[in-house]
Image 1 (cartoon, rainbow, N blue to C red):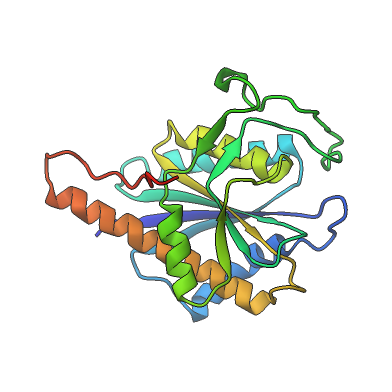
Image 2: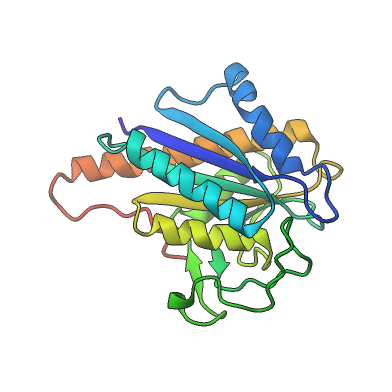
Length: 234
């Protein structure tokens, strides 16, 4: 059975949001999983709160990837990075299908950087280009809806730090054999924290089940064409 290893991140405070719900969710996750565990084949390896600045968040992400290379180099574990961000205007959960090659911060990040309509990574071209997650977001969204959650897919993660770190994560995943996903959560005033932590646990469970099933199909096919978990509807 394939081992699925998650690295889960949120953000700390930023302009206008002192108590970031994603920081709280990330800090509570492992304790919550002690009482409501995932399958034995699924592990949450790390829970990280990124500083809400481009340079610090990217550095933290790179460190996590380096640790993955060291700890998982000889294993067949499937590595998935799940990033969380708060959407102040949302009333539901939003699973982001893509990130855009544009940094256009409406206000400075925590270290004062405030880019204006500039490419995040120049090799991808101009700001109209995007990178898409290879995870099957429509399947994930449908499975979570069936569990009673108010969730939808989205193609617009904004152009602030959420989009920035998602684009960088998808870029890094493209040559590190990892997967990345970004999910926007609403403020706790709209969906309470107990519902949100349950959602996060179930999100990880749904992703892990899908990844494991695809891995089993690949094993069954032996040397035939591998089964890809790309969602071709994205």
